Image 1: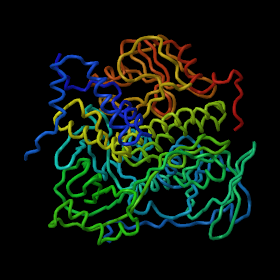
Image 2: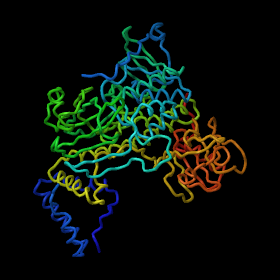
Image 3: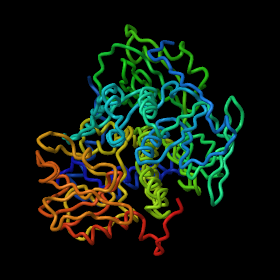
Image 4: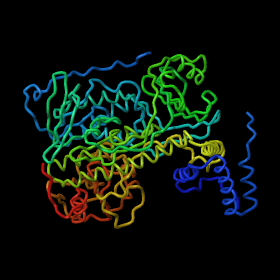
Length: 66
Length: 547
């Protein structure tokens, strides 16, 4: 399994709306905790270690060098 | 401030009915001579109804308002014979670029599909657009434009709507079979019928600056999230006619609208964006905020609401005027057929059904864009920034970037006027969908399919039908348009877009929407679908409407 870089979410605008709405009434702390849980839930769904490593690297702050 | 435009002043004339003190009954009175009301006058009069338009002002839209007009409204205006000067004067564009901080996050093309008569989008100042519409209305013998006529009161009963109207010559009364209310987001008519108009207000303010400049920017829509020249907020840049550029700065809820409008405040913002050496002059400055809401029922007895009077959206996506024009496209043929008695009153209720469905789709899209552009919480701001940062390199993140989903028509896929497919079809032309344009040839002359569809119902079929006959329901006949006989599919595009095979037949509504389609020509089925799309099978009793 390799990290999928192509669009793969059905109805992206609907998904994004649901994501944002799901946190609407949460405090910042609650939202952060929810985000961490979400990462773990989705990581478990993926399972493959190499893919997860690739995803972690992609998500890290990139060195913004002009 | 500079003025590239001088406002026309349309003459007030006292109407004979006011002068003579005789109350007259009119088939249709349109309230409001903005883009939607004027389009209503053109469409209804083209369908044979004399129209009176009342407007409390006597000029075109003042200042900078609607800018972008999309392909489908242009197709509607083309049907009404007014699109050409708009397209000629307007600035056509199709590429949009989205920047995050100082980087290009991604770009999009609105119309990757060629072979359409109309461009994907034009930018044109609303006053130019209204000028063309006013001129077209003036050329119509059955459109009566009455400037400086203010509607004071409206009541209605089973017989008609009664209007109380004020002019400089005093107050007089009119009667109307139907009233089309196109008097904008603050519609007085809506208040007069006591209609509910609810939704969400957004706590944010935006500055519009229209500037005149000779700029090197390409003719594209540029949108910045959190740019270095306007940190933490968004900026939108659009080109209009006459080298006028629209710049839209997000200010935040705490901004003072009066303060922000002052040139000494606006000019530094623009200089920060364009550089100190940029030469420009201010044409128009205003500060706005917005809401997303819609009227509960588009029809209140004899009053039909259209445009902003019926629904108000955020400006992201150019969904305001564009949707309003499509309201009229939907309403005009129905009102004309109901008024003449050729269709039952139930047909008019499908105006609410179809356009409320479209309005909800527009509201959903414009609310989503607004939530992306102006995140309401720290967490949603993080997600927004994460999407934008990823989008620079990651293709997967780009569909999530939302700087406004630009207006496209909402197909009426669930409409009670549709006859469902009985056979398989490929492509987009499902019942309830607006017809795609395509190049064609007629008698050796190249042209466009939509221009061949005419004013009424059309049966588009491939080849010669088994028996040559007119299909008619009561007073409504459907005109036959044969591909390969009347018109040639010169470039094969009609075949592809409509998935045509020998015998394939479409029934097309007067507003150029697919009502039904089949793999063979069956006169009985076509007649049944025509009855259905006239609203005749919505109620079992076929009572024609009183004219």
